[in-house]
Image (cartoon, rainbow, N blue to C red; front, side, top):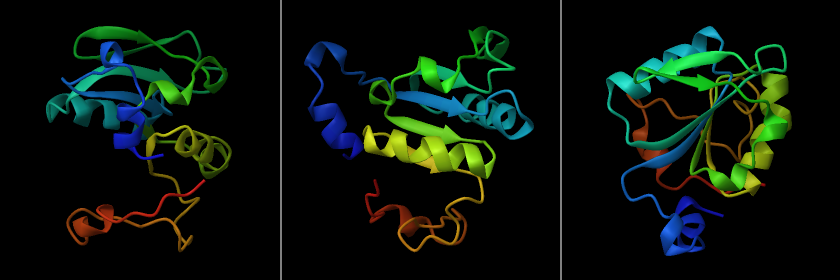
Length: 140
């Protein structure tokens, strides 16, 4: 399911025209914290943000736009509630959870090495091939 289909299937009362419902997995690690920083400094249109990490980090806080966000585990979230899921995780975590997010209708951006050699998943480097995003195949 694409983001557009996901949005179209939601009742009007639930639509978020001001931004995206975003999940950041691996939010307590170095890459996850930098991703949160870039979303903030670049004013990425976020209407709702949920942060996820390991059970060890669950219950701790990370900051986004001056607010503390409580870190959740994957088991606590429903991927159907998000438009975008960023994975700043190890390959094994991405292998387990990224396909579930995609199946639920999220656009998944995975920064791990897990899918790099998969011909069904585009490897996008914005400065080199930004057009690769346009026709990305849907994987389950």
